[in-house]
Image (cartoon, rainbow, N blue to C red; front, side):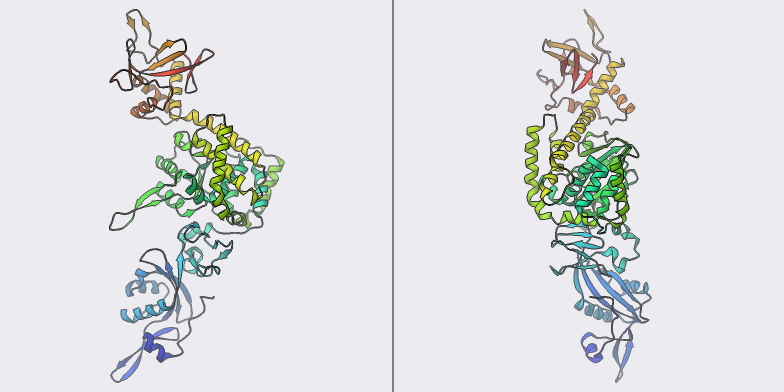
Length: 597
């Protein structure tokens, strides 16, 4: 239907006037009033208009798309809130189109009532990506329907689904917002079909980026079904691309993000506020956001957002209301980070990420050829890659949890490395689409090959996690202090000892076990100094003490003395905390940190 055809003059003037209180002539509204005994024609405006769509947005202040036709013939489309449909507010909108209303409030209300009788109802799509209520995947320029069809917007921004008769409003490309800069971000998230299907694109992508590309392909599939993944397992890890400049991090992400349109540049993490970042990420569902240049100086608030985004929560903000309600800007999309520095300030951040290491800036002929192939057609878009994935949504939903559980069971049986439960879950998760979707999508790699890639990638990350663990950092500081002579061992010679100056003591319980005793308050300044010199985040004294003396911390020896708390009172050394040391080939260690004792 062409919604921009001119509005005709009224044909049955008297009948229309009797029913509606006005009629149209010469693209103006008129009415008739008695002046004495005679009916006189009264001009009400220099325009006419038509209510095209009533836009439902879940509030009492819904919106409308109104077509305005000036008496000189120009046609405009405006988006109006229900609260603006009163004579003062509406007159302001009219003047922006060189129009005016000459009548009174009652006459304008009768015109409004006539518009409302003929307008069509449509639903505003305020969040791009997957919309669970309607089961559509919305781009700024069209929607992918449950029937597997891509339907484009018309000139006023409406998508009409012939299978369901549902109508959706996507404002970014509607005439009412054609020149509105506020929608520039949305206009980048658009469907551009391109020439390659999933199979051809994945082959080129894998050849260009090899094993890292294979993991990225699986991450893309998971991101397209973010809501299913999160609903069924309760978490969604991030992808962190680590490596120096020129190793291919940026090009890998940009090639991946082109399946979602033109928003592939990414957001510089250190130039974004937590408020702006959380609002941006909350504006789309089941897609990928690219946060660039993670550094040790990354804002603490943004790091906290990362922690909460892992389990789907986000920043909570107040909203204007009489009941002090809040609204959570929830994260419902996957996130990719990159950086030349690992996120080691907080182990909790790194443990929520799947790490991809980019080590070389030298690429094979095959890689360069595949990359050139992607580059030559990138502007045509890779939208069909995404819709090839999306059409299998129901199949993925039914099989994902089963395959994830199978992967977890198999990994527990085969993994001899000391993986954390979280790392196991990440491996099981990233491998799930490779196993589940192999009957629906043609992958450029064998399942056994990608399993080995993901597994060994996790092994390397697990080693790094142990090295960056808060308590590992403490013991590294302890070992460094001993090596450099900053920490003093307790020594006793008869009745003389250096108890006041000493920091630690070695106590042999028996031939099988050696106990390390430490005075934490004395060690603490050296620990802080070590962290500052090495760019590590340090804990306060109480937090450090709680972790070291936790019942779950295996090296710690709980105190059995009555009413002494966690600390132990040694007859010679005094109040201290005790830990079991491991010994191998005359080398002592604790938490896999070697001590030069």
